[in-house]
Every structure is written in C-alpha cells, then in structure tokens.
Length: 248
Length: 277
Image (tube, helix red, strand yellow):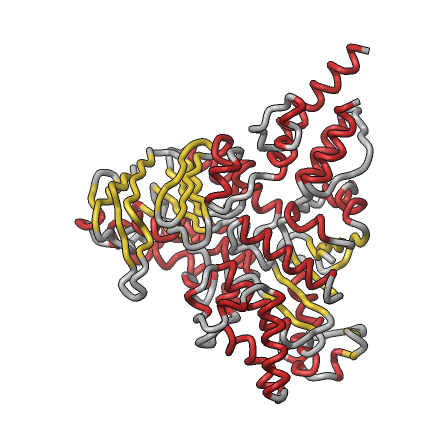
C-alpha cells in the first residue's frame, strides 16, 4: 500500500501509530481505537509492537550505528533476548534477502547510500515483522539505487508476504508495485482504492498529488478527446498500451 | 561566476579520493543540476564552491577570486549553501531566529534584518511558523527553513543539496518557479539531485558525475535521454522518456522528457491518423 498526500498531512504521524511510538513515546491526545496485527496498540509496549511492525526511515544514516553490518542487523534481536543460534539464522536470512551478505563485516558508515538503506531494511527484516512501514526509503538514493530498493521491497511483499506500507511523494517509480493507494489530506484519509482508480481521479489531481507521468499523459490525451484503453501507472504499461493503438 | 580548474580532492580522514581532475565553468545566472550515483563526488564538488573544502590540486575561482585567498565568511556572502539534511544546519530556538542568524553575523541593521526575515518567511510559506521551534516542524518544512535562512542574505550563488527530498508535488512546483525567479534576477543556482522527474520538468543544464569525474555535461534533454550515458552514472531516464524510447521503432522521437510535449506529439499523430480516414 502506498500512503501519500501533501507534506504535513499526517502521513508520518499515522505511521508512528502503527508501531506504538504514538501513544507510548509521543505525548498528546489519542482518541479512537488502534489495532495492529491483532494487538491493541495502547495496551502493548513499543518493544512488543516492534516485533510485529518494523519502520524504515528516509535516511539510513539515522538508523545505523554499529561497527559492522552484521552487528547492526543483530542488535534488535539481542535486545529482545533471542538465542544466539536463532539470531545467527535470522541475520543470515535478512542479509541474503536484501543481497548484502558480502557486506556483513563492513562498517555501515563506509557503504554507499543504497547499501546503507539495504542494511536498514535488513535490521528491520531480522525482527521478522508482519508489517513493514517505509517512510520515503529512496529519497537519498540515486535513481538506479532507488529502483533496486523498490524491487527488494516488492520481494518482501510478494515472496515473504509481509504487508508493506510505503510513504512516498515520488510515485513514478513505486506505483507499479502497489495494490492499493491511500491519500491523506489535513489529517484525514480522503481517497483509498486501486492505484489506477486513484491516480485517474479528479480529486487526486486537484490536490496536487504527484501522479505518475504515465497516468498524467493519459489524462492529457483524454482532455483532447483521445480516450485510450486502460490507465497506465508505469512506463512499461504506457508503452504497451500505446503500441497496441499505434500498430493498428 | 564559478570556475573549477582540474580539481583533485582527497578526504584526509578516510583517504577517499572524491574528485579526480574536475573542470567546470558555470556562468552568471545559470541553472545547473549536478547528478550521478551515490558517492560520485557531487556534494564534495559543491562544497568547493563556498570554500568549505579546498582543492588538493587545481583551483576554484568564484567571481575570479581563488577560494584559497578568501575566508569562508567572505565567500558565504556570495555563495549560499543549503545542506541536504536541514538538521546539520538548524539550531535556533525559533524559525525567526534561525533566519535572522546569518544576517546578524553579517552585521545588517535591525530594520533590514526584520524586513529580510519577513520577506524570506513569506516567500517560503513559513510565516505561520515564525515563533515555532524548527525542530517541531516536518522534514519538508525544516528544509524550507534552511532555504529561507540562506536566501535572506541574498547571495549571488545559491547551492541546494537535494532540495526536493520530503517535498510534495505542489512544493516542488513552487521550488521550480522559485528557481526560475532567482535565475531571472541573474542569480546562479546549482542543485545536487537524484530527482530525475524534477530535472525533466525544469530542463536545466545537467552535469553528470561518476567516480569523481564529470562524465557528461549538457541540457537535461540531451543527458537524460541518452540511456547509455545516464545509466553509467546510475541515472534512470524520466518516465516519459522511457515510454517514448519504447516507441522509437514506430518513428517517434526518443528525446521527449515531459508530459506536455509527449501529449502534443501523440495528439498530432492521432489527429493526422483521423484525417487520413
């Protein structure tokens, strides 16, 4: 699921509710009911929620601190008192999944931005959460690095069946992987549905959400009276649809 | 305005050679986007522009003055630098104090400071946060505070390291307008960015870096649509370019970068087809 909306609309605040940072860490008033992975968030401590919900932030530098990749990935598990064998197993698996096994002895701060973000993902993955929340995980990465991170996230979702919530402004790269898009504005959810429906809706456009360029192109054509089949959310789809029309 | 002459730079702490013979000339009033993979030397290069780093070999001239012969404080009046991570820059208790800080250091009088602060906050849509602590603001807002605090002293060159991170679509459009406005006032704007779609919308000059060297330099249209060149520097072409590259064998141009021109080309084609029938 992609969570998007204008800056300051409440995306990050909502994500902080998922792992209990709200209400346990941030002071304020919370009304209503919050249930995540079957747990009522206000009745369970952050460390309990952390085993169900993992957060990966924008800038991996803020999350990494250990002297080696391996130690960083093991850190959360050591804190939970997981046995040594289990830690080793889980660390290996997390490193494999994010394809950084060969970096295990390296110092995280010496790695490239893309590699660091993989380490940050591996740290969270080792906790074996049911849900992973990514807050603009690629904004510090070069475009190719960003593309690869989205592929890793997609794998986690499709192969390990982890529920993925991706907070993102740049929808061009991420949209093709999403089953669902939620748009927030002024602290409320105002749109919720399939990417195609949401991106082609008048509301999304009026709100100035960064609709993928492929979808925008379709809207431009439609305005001029050329209604093409389908609504693309990625360049591959747009090329495919256009080729079908153009070949006739 | 900015002359970089065969510059080499190695970080003493890590021994990493980040710049390996970079030469670059940026004219007054130009808008340049420096792109390329993580660790290519982009930030190291722009830090040479305001004297935060000095070359080991070669020279950097700002307005014909060698950065070795001028203090960072003097250079800062000319070259304003907005960091990638606003938290490396912000420290005051209120947004207002933050924006006023450099102005006070440069010795502006009270009245001018007040005027400039009000102007900069208004420009970046931050007036309502005037008395707020920068640390209470969202990441995107903190970024704008950092930008306001640099623009307040009206430097001739504005360097923005990753200005679009955390900014939504609307704010990016505002940023784009804003850069155009700075350019039209004769100011030089240099951005370091990974945001291909933003660059495609602005179509600035693009300087592409890879492994401490400049590997390509030209208009965005030229650089971003050349997949071989771009991919070598880990830059993926914009979405519209990718669509049109997939249509190249059908006789469509492969150097299209934005939605409006893409729409125009397709509409013309469809209309011509209609007329044939």
